[in-house]
Length: 267
Ligand SMILES: O=C(O)c1ccccc1NCC(=O)[C@H](O)[C@H](O)COP(=O)(O)O
Image: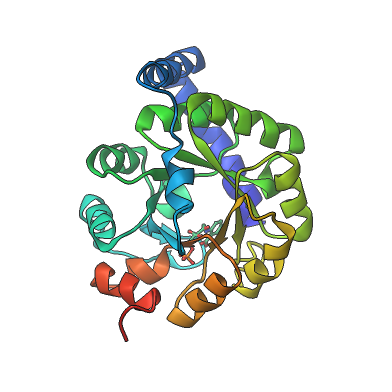
């Protein structure tokens, strides 16, 4: 499966990173930032807070390419894209940092987090705690934990590390069983990916169907394949708190109008 392939490649990438910056160094850097935040009044978990506001929240994704779609954006002015999303009313951003399959880069995250006021999710395939410390150092407010590539022990341990650094964890599931594992890990934000990563088929009924399994006090996110105002209307009526949208926005010339159109504010 592609996900296993990406996870294996990510493990290799992180082992190489550890030769450049030692795990103790990145951990110390992340903890120093977290300590400073604690002294300045404590953690606020801005990613979770941003998704809890009234109405459906938009997490807009900065993504150049993907395994299912190939190159989505030949021209990729990532900073301008991020700023356009923010001006359009995005609640949060998702920035791909995986380089081999999504043509992402840590630099994109670092520069974007530095230049926008809204919280940023590091969209990567977290397979090592090193990546959580890196995310903090890069300026992220949240990390992605995918149930399909993590054991129960890893899910719990990584969520705890994130929490201790003041980072939110978006715990991603695709099946009933994975939602249950996310709940067991005490996830505060659960995302259901509508894309089947074995076949790449997308069905937004997946997140509609699994909604009832997740208690109301946990933030519920629908991810992937969201393309029309009708999709948003159905998800909103179903009690979805936030949507994570990449391709639809990345292909749109005017992101503000695209967001307003999806939200049902303009025809
Ligand atoms: O999108 C893929 O091809 C893909 C393949 C393997 C693992 C993950 C993949 N996508 C990551 C995502 O979750 C999407 O980038 C995100 O949910 C936005 O989806 P979309 O709105 O359909 O671009």
